[in-house]
Image (tube, rainbow, N blue to C red; front, top):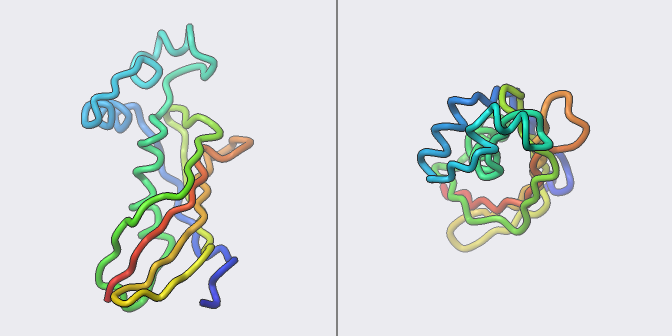
Length: 141
């Protein structure tokens, strides 16, 4: 419980490519032009080019936390849900993101440990985060 209120990990930087964005669009069937049509996005969007889906950024949290936070004795981790998610800034194609994880709360349950994290996803050279979330994970031994 000593970790409550503290930052406990920062992931490495990861590139967000147009190919990743296209694959995510195909899987989710979200083919909005701001994600896939570079020329139109340059002309018509305020972003100057294509951007990643907010949910693509959010979906990266599972892999980013694996490299940033290690819980000893946990045999399985289950995504229990999110209390709050916002996307304050876009993730432009070919930018780099990383996540910072802080512990908000830890609760011992009958069969697991429940941890609530404050997550901030940063975009390299951006003035504000591209995703902020409150994420609940359950750790089972």
